Image (cartoon, helix red, strand yellow):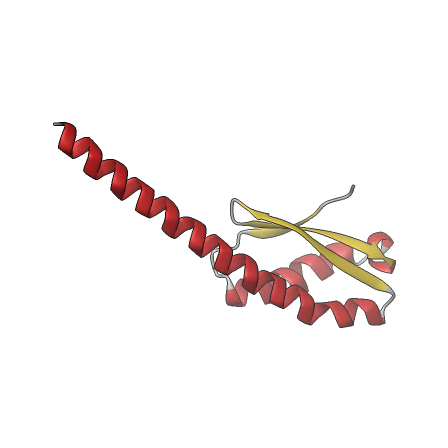
Length: 99
């Protein structure tokens, strides 16, 4: 009986390690997309900062002109989220953090 517990624990640990690796890979891809989009935001007087990737949601902070723009939601959902979703299909959304 104890042997089964040990095997289960090893399996759970391997699954957890795989999940962490996948999240790290996803985060790297997300950062690459954000860096590709940044010049477009900069050209309109704005900027974007990656905050975190957690529970399949990307948290960002918009700055400059983007922070007060009436099209902020459009930019996040139709541009940033769609670009991220292409390379990280498991992403559920992008959330603008207003600090």
